[in-house]
Image (cartoon, rainbow, N blue to C red; front, top):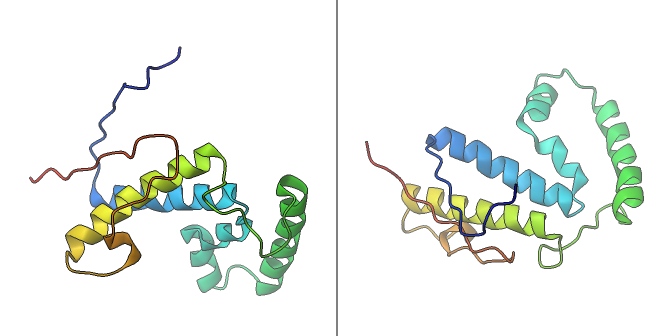
Length: 137
C-alpha cells in the first residue's frame, strides 16, 4: 500500500517525548552521513560510561572497529563524514524534521536567543518541511 504525498498525520506527544524524537532524528541523520562515532553520545551508553560500567579501553577498541565498518560501509576514513547537502534523502528528511523540532523547542524556551536553532530551519530534503505546533492545556 502506497500513501499519497498529501497524506498528513498528527501525533500528540509530551515535550520530553519530542526531545527524544529530536535526539533520535539527529543520531539517524548523523550515522547515515558517516558519523558512526555519534553512537557513543546515546544516553544509555553515556550513562554507562559515567557510572564506570564500560572500560574506556573497550570504548577505544570499539571506536577502531567502527572506523573499519565506516571504511567498508561508507568508503570514508576516520573523522570524515558526508555533508547533509549531499547525504541520502532519508538522512536529509530526518535532519529537516530535527531542525523543525529544535527550532520550536528553543523558540519557546528562549524567544530572544541567538543559537543556531533560533533561526528558521533550512530545507535540505525534497520533502516539504513539517509543521509543528503546541497545544495549550
